[in-house]
Length: 121
Image (cartoon, rainbow, N blue to C red):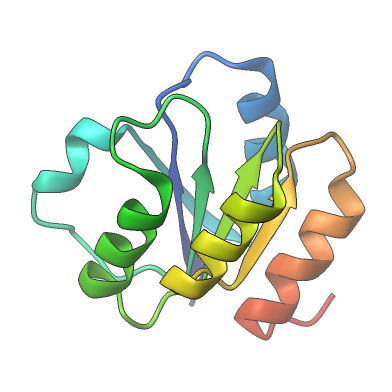
């Protein structure tokens, strides 16, 4: 059974997102959704949720709390292009499993995703 990975982003046309989708596609089935789509009932439970912090309408820590309530079994990784220690503290205290710099360093992100989903390489 393939793992279900949700990617929350408001930047669906980003070249970085296309790169991310190519990398994470080896781990499972990807669902890319905009923040505005979250109010709909989810079709499935996710094994992992990736949050692109840029461009979200809701406060990032509040969004993590909301996601944890909606998808309690799914670890959440928050990716940002401009990390700060305050935001890291806030999202980790809100329940995120990790807070990482958004980059093209695929190996680090892939290893972390595998670890959180207990996947074998």
